[in-house]
Image (cartoon, rainbow, N blue to C red; front, side):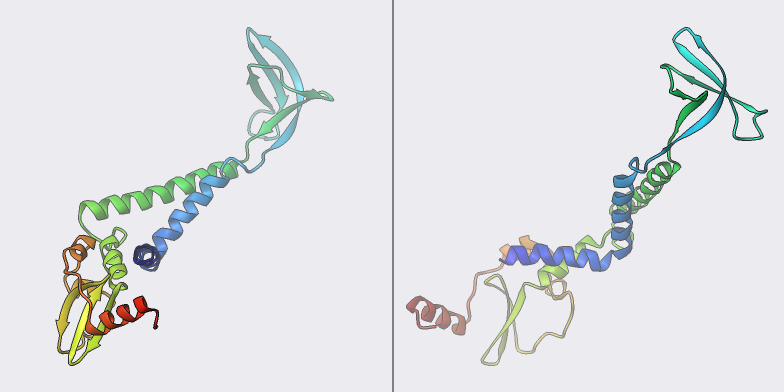
Length: 207
């Protein structure tokens, strides 16, 4: 259960610490997901003439634009559809290209920021992974008061015994020099007298 809590809180702090990066990453995924799905449409041009040049079909049509001297030339490696003396031309929707560009730019921004942050050991540019990891470990730390002493523990292991309660901090793990789970595993297993008594009562089925 402790490991699930660790993973859950790590994800939670990643979201809290990196809202802009996550929004860009999500936007990039959405853009790539929809790119290529926006439907194009058929356009029809008045056919002036057509000729087959080897394996290439050449069509001369009246242009829809006034800047092409009135004519446009379309080539294809297969016969195109002609209806009522009009050439049917499939136009790719430019919105798909825009989505690919947006997705690519956002992906580059996130990747470059991540690489630069890791290369320079700069959490502000990166994803604050170290800080998020330590803060998630902090959520596993708990305090037991017995007598005049405060016992700070994590996963049944003793971190420190103090006379005074530690001041509030969102990263108590770093303050107690717990930087990763390997530091936790090196701590001695420990139970307060109250915990031992409760465990014994549980075994007897009294609690």
